[in-house]
Image (spheres, rainbow, N blue to C red):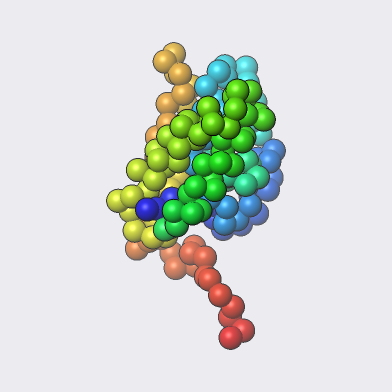
Length: 159
């Protein structure tokens, strides 16, 4: 199964998001956060988070780019619990058990989005507020379309 991790090419997310995600943390769209927002809520850094921020599942901060990668079943199970706990503490879900199916649905939505893409494919999200609610559009940048220096290098150059 595939999911996506936060990736940074520069420090811009540190300045444009009130709570930036950490490089490497697992991410989902997180559009649910904006389900009851109005145009009046779309100001400053909140507008940026709404417009194009993925939701990190450790910091619950936002990031502009995510990269597709494999996820282990045990990691996915841990993310489900963490997201369910977030729904309880932040959104008032009645219990972790009640929140788990919703958390699982959010994770599988992201997994579906990532499944047909090669590792290191970059994804962006663009949101707009419509009369029907939040509309999300996703864009991908295939690894062969990006410049080599855009990809994270794993390991040490000192080896």
